[in-house]
Image (tube, rainbow, N blue to C red; front, side):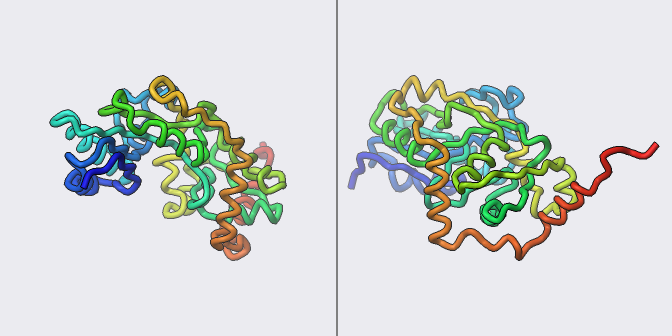
Length: 272
């Protein structure tokens, strides 16, 4: 049996990629592998600004390292015998089927906090940049790349062309809920010291500015032109979370309230 195309969303390691090669080598006209921008860092090259596909692969997280290994195996297969692989690297992509992330992670309770008018935490000054892409727009990019021989053996960032700060993102999510976000900023190291298990992943991802170049994909797959308003895509995402009971009661966990109270009770000036 032969396949016109395969889009692989479930390879997270070299073993996974090897399994895909055993299944599809010589049997598929085009194989698209979904990788991740977490292959680039941290530490992120170019100070996290305009990161192109040729940038060093500095990823150190288990997720990033696994994707690096998978990507390399598939690209080696292309170099060896022309395996028709294309590697697409999304940044944060959201939509039905997943939780809405905030800078601190993907705990759904922050949605409940916003609904109840509670303040939410943000890391540092909240001004680190990232790119937020609706899954429906990402899908257009994946589908439009199919069958394009110029994409064989190539790696592409698939990202929204407009970078936004995490505080902007938090406010977009609040707008989708019809509320205003009250944001309290706390240094990353302070959060990690308070609860390393809960906040330790900040070092690996969202506490860093990351702005990726999408110029290469725009050149080769011009149909990819993200147009979905983020407020709209976030609202659909939250609707899915509600249907699947993925917005827990924020009153059941008071850690965020205690951190915010401690910050708000700090003296505004040091006694002389």
